[in-house]
Length: 594
Ligand SMILES: Nc1ncnc2c1ncn2[C@@H]1O[C@H](COP(=O)(O)OP(=O)(O)OP(=O)(O)O)[C@@H](O)[C@H]1O
Image (cartoon, rainbow, N blue to C red):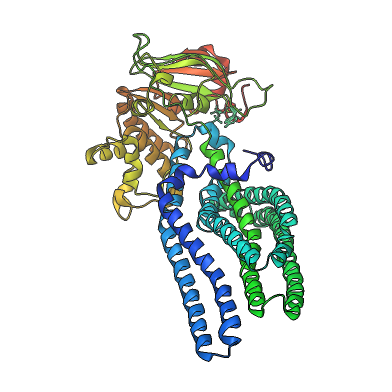
């Protein structure tokens, strides 16, 4: 996980925001048109003071009510045109910007699916959720508002300054005096605000993580009566975020005050000087009215710069957070060779070494030179003490993690050289902790059939192998929706569906991580009997904790101290390996072997 403040120091806001260009490019014409419309609308507002000057110096001075009415109608028409043009701008950008947000969200989601498991191990899910929601909304708001209005207001201020200088250059210069201090203040504000904006957005991510964990872990929280401590943890994070948001508000209030007060002082000075000039007859009353109206019309474009800059900073932070994820390298799709390296078939581990990327430097690798051969059609049970690395070894076969040394061969082909789609077709997995999705029972099972899909008979067969007869008794059979993560089903039911998902595609290689642990002994015996038929046609590696699961296998491999220390039949290992005998006696499930 990136740490707060880590990336903010040398950031250029403009350079960061420019990274949005590939997404904005397709809608640039519409956004450009909308900006031009807004410039015209904004500059129309500057014509009003000129009409006022004409009214004051003309019809008012000459006491012609008809001329005053005409002038008032022109001002009204200008106001209406300004409002209509701003409405048109809004209409022009609404649809394309929603499209930009949707495209960025789709890219982020697609990318998250392709990032390696090691990335997901490192990143808290709340941080990813907040990037996909809050950050993308902030970016859309920036594109809709500050991006256009920093430009529109800049042009309006420049045109307005020109109008002021033309009307009376001495008064105009008085109004321009505060520009330099304002630029300095804005740049100081930008630096400080970018730091605090980054902190706030990271804290929103942390808060989202806690909320998500509390919702998913609600059973544990209720079961252990941990409401109060969870609420306290949440409260502490919420308080931290509140403090950061207040800091943002203070900075915003400061810049707002400076940006408001300094121009007001300049306008006050110009008013005093202008009045003196009118009294001396050096300036017409109409010119002074026009001058002050122009200066007042420029107040909003100047004052809004504070919060437009703040929104731009927040958007830059969001862009930075978005690309932190997008810049992460996707997993290597493989497929460099794909032809057998040698003729031997089955599943082979050759000198496989593995260390988790976030493991401490001095920790020994989890797997340290694993050599194992599972012959074609053979079922190999993998036994080892808790924490010995069995799950890790099974995760290396479908390349959920990449080996750090050695290689794994499927029918002679290194899995690292195999296109991922091919690998997914060949290998099916079922984990100890079965994960189901918010979909129907049938859809969850058929997910294991790959893109080619499978028909009703295959689904029936898979449910039969997994002894998932309970599906028929569900309200809508296999069309019944399972709740989020399948929590509406029992642990054993979920495990049977996960097993059905693993076998439905008739994979050549099956990797099962203790797939029967949540079943009662009777169901386990039934599943094992049915599974035997499936295992006859596949090459399988089955993590086993219990003698009953070991019985499914032709041979057993013992994983100890990061290596395979013994291979043989159950009886041979019971006879020859004290550690294996100890593990099978039940004592080994409580301690680590390393
Ligand atoms: N994502 C991870 N990051 C760092 N270390 C990990 C990670 N996952 C597992 N480990 C460590 O790797 C070691 C092996 O874990 P693994 O889950 O493979 O053991 P196991 O033999 O399957 O255990 P069990 O029988 O309890 O399921 C453990 O010491 C564990 O703490």
